[in-house]
Image (cartoon, rainbow, N blue to C red):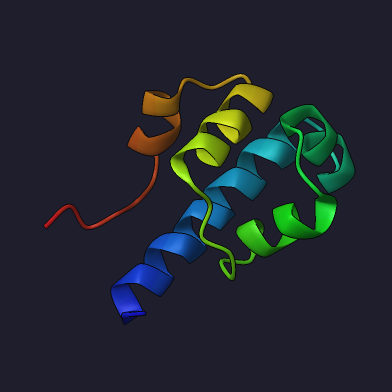
Length: 79
């Protein structure tokens, strides 16, 4: 994996954690709502797991965000 890949995963995880915290949800709450294991969610939030598009959609829905809105708020270098 490249440094850019790792950065994207970390930024995605941070954004997810921000949204989860803003909703007052625990990792267990979000994992249950998204149909995931809490340990997998933890790995996503820390940037050590690379979720599929399907999982990203499940997570966005679980925090009441559209997939587009969720991704638009990521601070990614779009080059």
